Image (tube, rainbow, N blue to C red; front, side):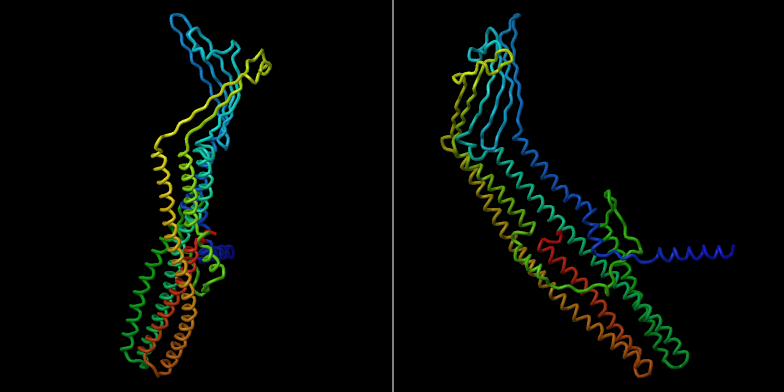
Length: 465
């Protein structure tokens, strides 16, 4: 029984130790979760659905259309007239519309032009726009703009992801900085406490002057103060990072106390790659924000072409072959001489409205092209600046890594002199403070380098790739 309890206690203690083991949330895992579950990421995916819906709506303008018109009039127990006209219209891409149907009219006061045989008339034919609408009309313009919009939603989606990952990434490296700074101050406080106890022991043995305990105590107080501030910063950064963590089903998550970022020694500084240089050369054609401008200019070009078409006069031709059915046979009485045709022509004398619309369309294109050029220049500048910052931060990290090692050597040497009685506590604290500050600076430079990486990718518009 006693052995069983010992075994249970061992399992429980093992479980507690395992549960308290730190869990590293890597930058890659964090960004992957942001891309999958963040509400803004879901919003980005909706852009594609908007494009599909808009395209479906525009294609619907080319759907065949069935129609039926029935009109009757009765007065003083007489049927004045009864007209029925039913059929199907089929629009096509090149301004040509096919149609066919059945017409049956009767009545004592029927308009003579509407007279039909008792069995009615079948008709089939087409209408063609030879003026306005020959090369483009509103239906074709809307469909072409919808097709362009579908492509632009891809770029819009990428731009949203680019912005989201950039903001989330910066907060991750702030979290990384605050955690590693916290660890530096925890170690510094431990060292200060150990030295304080050693100095007190030395004073009791008569090896150290009593004033050293005051200086050692001040170091403990200062480092405790720094640690408390570091703890506050880490808690705040953890809370901020939790804003970007969501589970499936749009459920917000919180980072547990056991979850930690990378440790500073696990991070390697990064520098410019050939891929970044290639992306810089193609930024005009690849950056999602610039691609959206290009699609907008293309849509405005469709609108301009439509406005140019509206300057033409309207000239519509209609032709319908007609035949009288005999029983169930529709074509038995068909004759090429039986038909109905018509022509419609109209044109404003001054065409001021149409010319004004065309000028507005041209001005919109000019305005958008100017915005495109301004945006391009801004993005290229930002991209070059971020690439320069990436290279500089890489060099700074490498340089300061050596500085940290040199300060560590100075500190070790000063400690040996202090233990041998050849140095003072003031000098040891001074060396140790320099070492701590260089470690903090190195953490800051590491975070700066990682932020420079995502800033370069963000300015090039490739964070979502």
